[in-house]
Every structure is written in structure tokens, then in C-alpha cells.
Length: 107
Image (cartoon, rainbow, N blue to C red):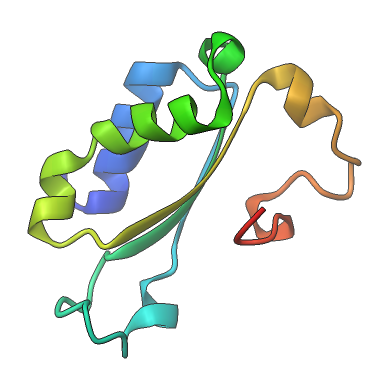
């Protein structure tokens, strides 16, 4: 894989077969953080919609996603902001609020 973003895309697609997946590299917004010595691909925002999340609560979804990238966190990945929904949950959002950029960072 050429980039960490590509790896995120590949592993999330393979593991969760998402109906919808968006990944945004937000590293530029965090380039002056003290604990982020690397300047490329350290912070990502993810919106993923999958049936697999049906039997999981929010914490379980996040743990499952984070576990895919343990080695990357040890290397240089610093943060993932995750919005993980089932298709039914995702459909409840107004049509004007369906892109990752429309979701607040922390909810």
C-alpha cells in the first residue's frame, strides 16, 4: 500500500464490508502538537456504515476498528476520530447531514 490512508481504506473495507466509508486525513490540523513527531498521516477522521455493527455498542465498534491499526499506532498513527453506524442509524440523519465533514468531531 502506498499510504496509511490506503491501508485504512483497504482494512476497513475488508473487515466490515461497509455500505459507506469516508476517510479524511486531518494531519495538517495537528502538525504543531507536541506528541506528534511525524508530519504525515498521523490523524484521520473515519465515517463507516456497516451491518456488522448491528450487534455492537459504540465502544465495541471503536475497539474493533482501533484493533486493526495497533501496529500503526505504535509506529506513527496518533489519532482516529471514528463515527461508526449501522445502515439504520445512518439513515436517521437528515439528508443534509450525511457527509463526514457534517459530523462534529466529538459526539
